[in-house]
Length: 222
Length: 254
Image (cartoon, rainbow over all chains, first blue to last red; front, side, top):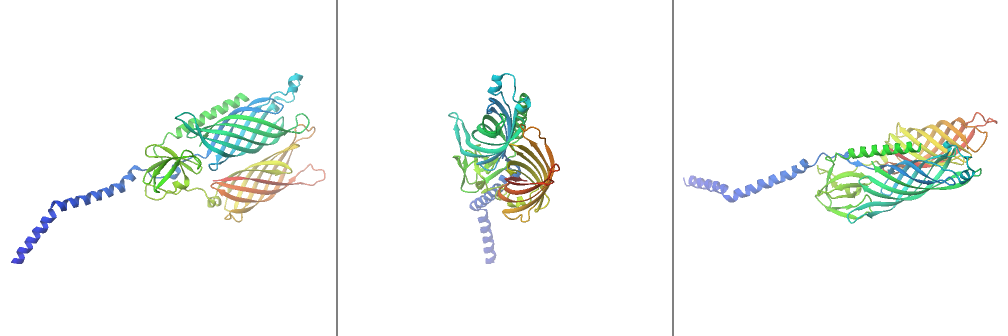
């Protein structure tokens, strides 16, 4: 009988302890911690989309249009225009294919002589293509205003190609330097100065000519 | 002609700008990664020389805007942009906690290539030569290539068209030799100032050997030496011309 009382008493005590405010609070913290853990596991997955590496826009190619002035030895200074397609190998090195066209003017001889043209209109059109290798020598920044800073680079460039002029194709090497200003995201502006070296024999005798071109260009990375 | 070219270029530029402004409009689904290292550095431009303008701490989420060579333009949660290197990006985590592994082309991808394009320059019969070529690989040992070459010389200029079979017996080597066999046509145009000579066109065949040297990502260096036999029908002493050629250049593969 005494045992029976004792067991009832103990059961009540145990029941009371379970319902005591302290135990309840402990339970609640457990539950809260549990739900915290759950939310930290789940939430980022709701915020972030499925990762797809191919969704990253890779901008290693560059298309450029340019225009400027071309000094063709003996034929005066004339406008030149064309386009370039470039590929950036790494932060320093880029390769480029360039196409350009210019119309040669008249030589002093033709002007003074008056009327005996050395070349036909067709032959007077100079067109060229080049494969170039460039190196970003001094990458940096240009402080345009107090607020605006643009990335820039001074680069050196050289290449080989073919110049068609005066009815002949001539092997041409070119070298020079340029300055690039990156306006925003993928649009940039460049100023470029290049010497095109090729042989010419319009005056009967083979000679090496140096033809300086300075051009301004707009380009887009894609 | 000049005006026409100018207008064409202008129109082309407009089209390109339009195409890009639309393609960059949908930026809601840009991929995000979480910084797992203590911090990563953000540079002001895509290169290690550009100054560090921001440091992002562990646990931050960043959005990848675009990639240029080995640099990623990213944006922090408070919309600050900057450039992080490929090596640092490799230490970030994806949404599922897995590391972000940048899958770039490597030497194995060169072995498994389908298409390749290249340019090279060198010497052909004591004149300069410039070539452009496109190739398709059937297996890792065998490829076919179409080659267009231009050799502007002072006395005459030549244009060469040829198709080649390229055999690469050891594709797994970093410096890998190859053999080539080709057939094609050669057009020789004499210089405009030479009188009384006319252009001629002949069939030719070619054997050659060369080396591919894998550089990085999608770039391979190439050196080759070729021997040409030009089947010149109008040759008075009935001998075919034999011409040697060497070239160096680059191959980009996909």
